[in-house]
Image (cartoon, rainbow over all chains, first blue to last red; front, top):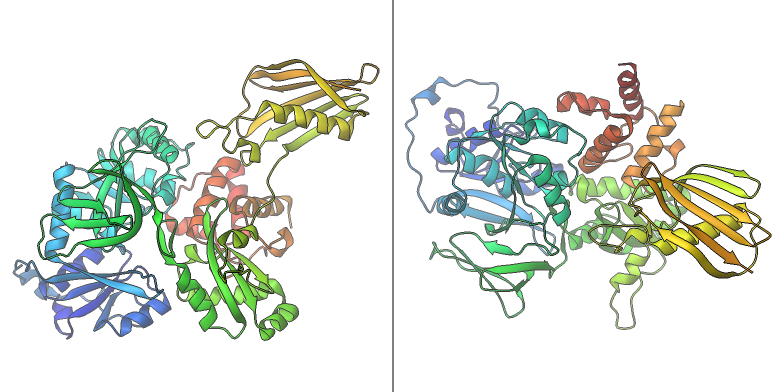
Length: 527
Length: 86
């Protein structure tokens, strides 16, 4: 504080990986009546943009920050703390606006306090340590892993847990702990780690940034033997609702936090009123909602072109804008999200004549690499497009609109329809095949949502297909005999398939087996 | 390129669902993250999971050491080898 006092200016950008240092900087700024401007990252384009909005930089801004860390200042010990004014602009944070330009949002001390009070009303704090997989440079982490624990006298961890192993390591140091996380980590908690060692101490798990799949939520609850509370909110509003999944067929509904009143607008988007504050206007969020009763609702996605990739908000318009503006190679571009192993962004690009020359001369990879490194100045790696398609013409429909489906089709993956063969041997009219029914098989999709199993008809189909491929099977299918489906086949099941063909009777006998015993058997008859 | 090099490259391509990249295009000593292959923090999580599933490796050390292990194919190969010798 002594050091900062020597510099002028009311608005300071703060970035620091260490939560404790970060909080110390924030408090110093507040005591000096200054606003902490908190960016989500410290990449070059972010620093450039901030330069116009702030008077200086503190923390980890290479080459930009005022020196603080290596100086000790004895005067700080004499500081008498003073109370902060309610209407004081405590922080400014940034979020992707629909135009693509980051939108600044400021919060008063009162707003921050009211939010904590609301949380404390619903879930009174008990002594525990708070560990986190989310950064405090975003509002969710800032509130839940720093401000809330600090204001309620709970211990909080300085360091982020980057891997599931880090969670285990950090948590094992405490008798009681809570975990502040997001779907990014919670859906990837490796279930073969020894979670039982820390499950006793886990009081609850919090998830926010994006909805957590019910299946993941239940799995985490099982692993950590603790309630998994989901928070819904936005940078604009802070936390406004919560839910907890139950072992039921449908997703749990969201309900508002104390002091927050939620309703649907005529357009079906969410209106947020803060009961405590007459000074804060109601906010409309671009999320589609449907209310089943006054307090309970479900979320139906956004109405604009902002998407969330692993909980990080990104404007598709901003990606398009960045590609169009920065390059003489791009004639037209459309960004979209696709669902592969994870939800990711992808782009379809119509190149200029120059762009096509570069594509021909340097190849696809070099071209994409160039675009990507350009985008990396401005966007976090996680939201960068992972798939690129170059086309002669962006597919507009007769109304002059681009159909999302035609774009998505360009990224479709060949569906997986065969087992993964580990080993096979043919002996005369008999085939022995060791294989896996991979989880990504198209047949598991929707059959069934809760418990995917391999349909019986597929097993018969595989038997016939491999029979025709490896055995002297010919002729036309006429009927099935003595078909038995005894045990279900689940995703990633390792199987042994035995096929025998009797050419005289023109019958193919099949049997699916595993360590668990016989799954199915039967005969397929031909003529 | 050893068998293990090939195996780990194939694992990375499979678990990350990478497009436009063949095994022989992943360079042994090139960085996996940022430049080089250009992987991100989610990919790191996925690789961590796959190492556990395929090789029973737990990322014991601090994040700095993990970063070291994840820096290139060569360092991943070393990690798996050391683990096997134990």
